[in-house]
Image (cartoon, rainbow, N blue to C red; front, side):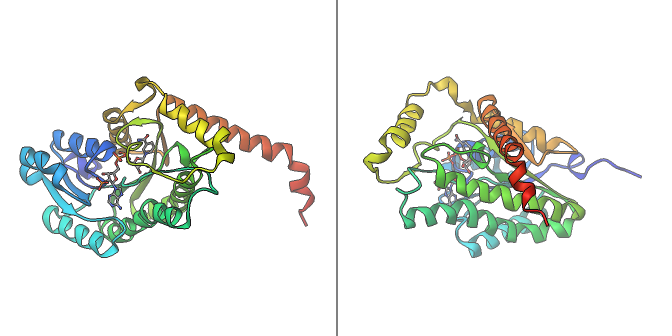
Length: 282
Ligand SMILES: NC(=O)c1ccc[n+]([C@@H]2O[C@H](COP(=O)([O-])OP(=O)(O)OC[C@H]3O[C@@H](n4cnc5c(N)ncnc54)[C@H](OP(=O)(O)O)[C@@H]3O)[C@@H](O)[C@H]2O)c1
């Protein structure tokens, strides 16, 4: 019996959301440079025109806002009509909201969930029928170090990434029997236009010593604190190449250190309060 994975005998097809810049663009670029095919979804596909010129038939540009379920469904249909299948879904589109939890307005909070969580769900509902029919595929869920810990200023952003982590932990077990893999991509600080694209909540003076100090600290970080997007994309490709990819893929040492400290903090709470935990047992 031939046990060679399908993608090793033919080029993979990627569907990438938020492919115009940063990590999404790098993923598209590296896939194309490796002879693979890419369906690139973007609100405005114009920034990808040069890439399309260079890679012709192997790059399909589709205008789609991830918040628009119908547009995402149509994009998936066009992808399958053109390439016949989808091997990797990069649920990458997203943005950050910075500010104290109390400072974020209802509109700002709902907007960031609309893209970072409900957009992810739109992509899942549109692509999983294709992957289930194939009995294969790999879903890359755009998380972050902020899917595992948070500090002042990133509460709402972290809330969206924790939501993606929670649903993905169930998803991985739901779709594994159907031949589908799921990996949460957890980059640390990465050199992309992410910070330039941040939404920022209005400042209350009471949060100057916490939120604004953190904001200032991030603004003063040296270039060397940010991983190049190309390395993040290369790390993601290593996981996609693996027959046994992880559920969680930490990308960048400083983020991984923060995530480890957060995990240890959870164990400390579990252990330190065991007497109360166990006292409620029937
Ligand atoms: N950079 C970091 O430090 C970092 C760290 C951890 C995790 N991440 C995550 O990595 C992912 C990619 O971010 P990035 O760093 O590459 O930032 P980026 O350069 O700002 O890219 C974000 C992409 O998402 C797209 N997008 C935003 N809202 C969208 C919507 N409603 N519909 C469709 N596309 C939308 C943007 O498209 P437009 O051009 O249309 O705006 C852009 O292509 C995000 O999920 C982010 O949370 C980034």
